[in-house]
Structures are given as C-alpha cells and as structure tokens.
Image (tube, rainbow, N blue to C red):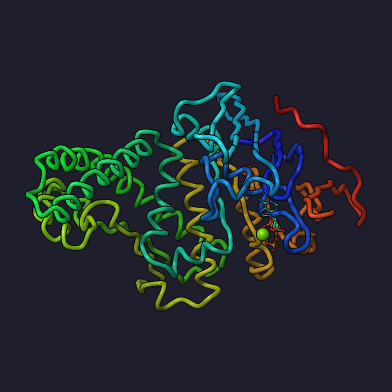
Length: 388
Ligand SMILES: Nc1ncnc2c1ncn2[C@@H]1O[C@H](COP(=O)(O)OP(=O)(O)OP(=O)(O)O)[C@@H](O)[C@H]1O
Ligand SMILES: [Mg+2]
C-alpha cells in the first residue's frame, strides 16, 4: 500500500502543502519544532481518523484559522482511494471523513483504506506504562484489519457507558438497579466475544514476529522476546465464565467503585524478555528495541492478514539506534513505504533508496523542500491546494 499524494491545508503549522512521496523510503529532516512529526500526524489522521498524539482534534487546526483538512491518495493492491479528513472546530460535528469525494456517515468506513503503523519516542510507554497503552496498541492494530472488531469495540464501550450510568443513578438515588442493566450486560457480552476472539487469534503470530524482529534488529540470537494476551476473565481454552455472569456478579462492587471491573477493557499484553517482565528487567536500549519490535510485529500481522504492507511512520527512531541496529532496521523495511523523521540526515546517509525532504520553519509556518542531492534544497514542493 502506498501514498501517492498527500495534501495539508491549515493543518498544524502548515498553511498549504502538497507532496508526492516515494514508494519506498521518505526522509524528513529538520530542526526541532520545524514540523516533521506534524507530517506523520497528518498521515495518521487519514488512516485512523485521529492523531497518534493524545491530542484533541481542534489542536490540529492552524492557530488563527477556522478549519483544517488533510488528504491522501492511496494505491493498494486492489484499489485506489482518496481519503480526506476535515476539521472544523466551530461546527456541530468537528470532524468529517470524505472518501473519494463522498462524505462518510461513519468513521468505520475509512478503516483499512490506509493502513499504517507508527513508531514514535512515546512508544517506550508500551513497556513502561500501564495496560491502557498496550490495549490501545492492540485495538489500533486489529481495527485496521477487521472492521467488525472496530465496530464491536465502539458498541462495547457504548453499552458499558449505559451500564455505568444505570449503576450511578441507582447509587445516587438510592434505588434498586434498573432491569435494563440486563440488556446492556448482554450487549457487552456479545461484543466482547468478537473482541476476545480477535485478540486471542492474533496473539501467537504477534509474539512470534516480535521475537523475530527483536532478534533481527538487535542481532542477538540468545535473547527472546515474548508477548502474551492476558485477560482478566478468559483464557484461550474453553470453559471460561461468560462475561454476562461476571458482570452480574460484580454489580455491587462496581456500583461502589463507579467502574466496570471485568471485561476486555481491563485486559493486558504481557511483554517478556528472556521470560522476565520487560518493564522490571530490560535496559533502556532493550526496551526501545522491544517497543520497535512490537510495532514491526504489528506491521507483519497486518501484512499477513491483508496480503500487503501498511505504510510505516518512524518518528525520531534513527538517532536512538546504534549503526548496526539502524542498518538491520532498514533491511527489514524493504518493500514498505516508510516515512522517517530525524534531525540529522547523516543518520541515513548510507542508504540509497529514499527521497529526502528538508523541513524548515519560516515565519512561524512549516515549509518542505525536496533534496535530490547536495546540501541545498532543489525544488520547493508547495503548490496550490486542490481542496474544493
Ligand atoms: N495548531 C497549530 N498551529 C500552528 N502551529 C502549531 C500548531 N500545533 C503545533 N504547532 C507548531 O508545530 C511545531 C511542532 O511541529 P512538530 O511536532 O512536527 O515538530 P518536529 O519537527 O517534529 O520537532 P522535533 O524534532 O522537536 O520532534 C511547533 O513549532 C508548534 O508550535
Ligand atoms: Mg517530532
């Protein structure tokens, strides 16, 4: 899958920008704060409908402007599509999704049209932080290859919010719990089945690939990296209790705590290096390699299920890897359209199959120009935008 064209208008620090990226490696280099990550964020918006940063949609609109848009033209094995996200903070629906010129009625319609995997410095949190970060990782991976999963996640959350509201009302008004709670627990149980099935279904291949990627990047055969999906309720064997029963059993406790204490929203991935919990055992460099391997394993899972590589976004990774790991990584990236950001382009100087862009800040705005060779920028990539 490749992005043939991308356009930004009033997005972050860009006024207007159009790029026609290389089908293999694209390198964005420039000083801190120039707008490199903003370019990857624009791609992420077109893939998953939101930022990879934990940031509100409205923050992505160029300060002083009312609306922003990002658009990509994507070629995949079977089709071409044009995906556009418009952000209009003043309007009732701040975000709208446009596919081939038509407004989509649901976010789920865009899932899978542009699949991407992003790795950024914050991904160290996959190892260091609590389960929520790892669930988000799993959800973003599976949503891109299974629309029913994405829909099940949304419906599960909606049903869970209704259940919580019923328990809250019962507590505040000191009344018995409404009988409607049964319906919402039933709905949660049904959607949870899809969620569990998909998560357990990808566990083994994800773990195998993470281990393989870890070894390829580190070059160390003796280290093993393992991943396991840990559910607070289910195992991959038959005979686990149903979520519906478990929810009924914890109503009283949930009413006291104001949370839902059981279900797939409480599950986790355990990450182990040499059979030990990575968080408590691994060095900084090993954690970084572990997080990167996890993301590359995500790419392999998407590739296996869909038959083509997603687009890979690597934010600030190169400077953190030693030269051997860097070259091992570039070897893995063959046949994958990749966007890499860095502050020093010499990080990639030994590699030939790529296009280099210089990102600069000019008068408070981002500016991008293509480098063919030599130290000076040769052709500006600005054009008039084609947004209607
Ligand atoms: N809504 C916005 N309007 C205008 N400028 C913005 C907006 N949001 C962010 N910026 C600006 O974008 C710049 C940050 O861009 P970005 O995060 O892409 O930098 P970067 O090149 O990746 O830097 P680093 O190398 O430090 O990671 C900052 O100067 C910030 O002020
Ligand atoms: Mg950045």
